[in-house]
Image 1 (cartoon, one colour):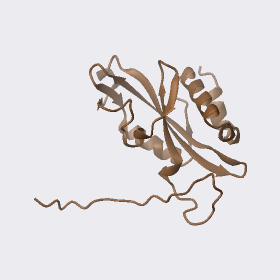
Image 2 (cartoon, one colour):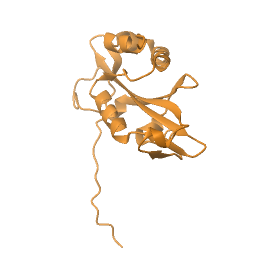
Image 3 (cartoon, one colour):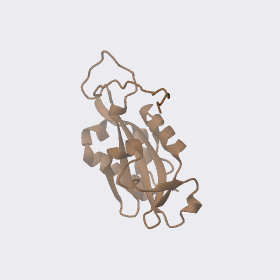
Image 4 (cartoon, one colour):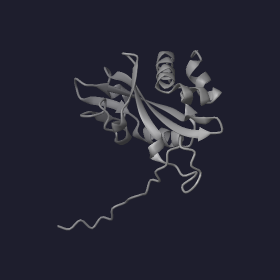
Length: 171
């Protein structure tokens, strides 16, 4: 049987925001500039996992995600943080940083996450928003330390909004 469904595709303009190029594609949103960072809340560790771009991170593999957190009462908490890099007058910086919550219970192979929230937050990161208010204070510190240690120049060039959002104590 022939598949008559039209395949949807799109072009991603490849450009490195750190190279200073201001020609073709300037101002276009590019997934090349966004990286998913997974924070293990319990372990207090963060790492880049590009598999998360397609919901295939190490944490997400083999897990069926359910619609409510109550359906996964013993889920281990994680943050998926979308980090977008751009360049301004000072140089490259962390331009968009948005966090999404999820839980995973490996034993029952179930987890909780809001897929629309994950997609919307990735879009917000690409559009240079900072959304870290929902994060718990220890996870904010883990992320701040990770971003600073990953590239101190990017951290130093980043906005006060990002730094204050991650370093402020949550009430």
